[in-house]
Image (cartoon, rainbow over all chains, first blue to last red; front, side):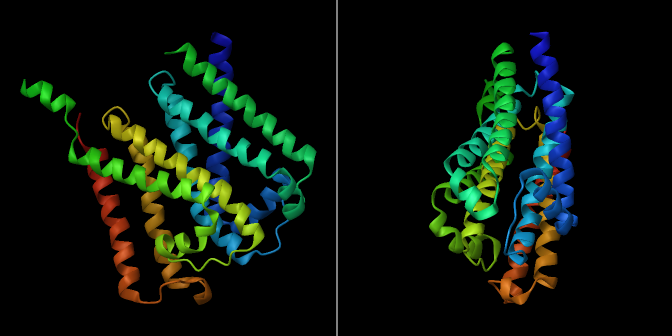
Length: 137
Length: 144
């Protein structure tokens, strides 16, 4: 159980840092955000004007999710109801990544292996958050 | 008896939080499952003229997922505002940035992207978000 808590803490820490960083960059530097998403997700968008404008509200949401992650890190048992909701977010992300796999390749040139890699990272998060919640009910 | 009533009854602050939660969850679900309505949603809720390209259609997925989960977090916070006070501060942060983003969008965005050009209507939208921010600040500052 201690291993699960430690791994969940580490995952949540990186999850929160990632969301705060990408959130801030998306809000204030959409061009840099686009470059980062190209590197991380391998996306190659065509239309940029709308996309960059979408980054701002999306970045705001990502920043908030990251901040709530940091809040949860302060007392993970107290905030376990919040932590289990992070796995819901990851499950939704896994859902559309799986369902739209072919479209992702066609539209953004995201390769099959890049997509699988992201799905695995997200699945690990789902498993850890869920295990943490179950072991602390 | 009175104490018991105050523990079980829902306060006005909680009602406001539940409304914010339902609004975001509904918007998120619509974004995930009813993408054909995306142009209408963008125009009605964000004053944004969305050009519905195939790439934008896909980008709506992560955006909607985050809108939905934000609604869930607000819902959880609404169940016990004093326990989730720090979460309410984070929610407030989102609204404050949203006020700034809306202001920025009204003032500086490309006119072709704006669905509403009437300044009064834009100001009303902005004031609603600002009023919610003030109310959230009041909830966040409340003593236990």
